Length: 174
Image (cartoon, rainbow, N blue to C red; front, top):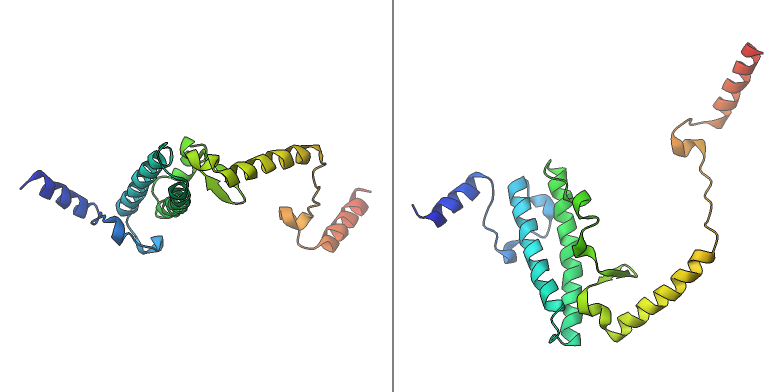
């Protein structure tokens, strides 16, 4: 038995199937084994790494930067889906570990992240400048106050019941 066959046997025994990226399930809920979900997440991480290298390459043209940035956003979204699925299956909690991860160092503009040299694109630079200008204005504004009632905190369903209860307690202690 060759080493390759042995590894295939071990993977099959552990619940890992072939991991051809073209055969990656679109719906993460179809995967029911933690090793298989971990393997798909690992493949996505390697794809992200490869695209981050390409997006930081100085020879990459603007059109390709936009394509790579779009692909990275989709891959990060898919990675998050796999992380939630792994946690759901009882596996490692990668979600907490990646919140402050340097990979997520792209800048968020209107719900879309821009990575590497994509932040240097003319329209993206303008959006970053606008965000910085508007961000300074927001610091001077007063924060909105939201009034939360007792029901929000789960204290009581009916405020009349609370008033009746307090009236009764006051009479007793009175």
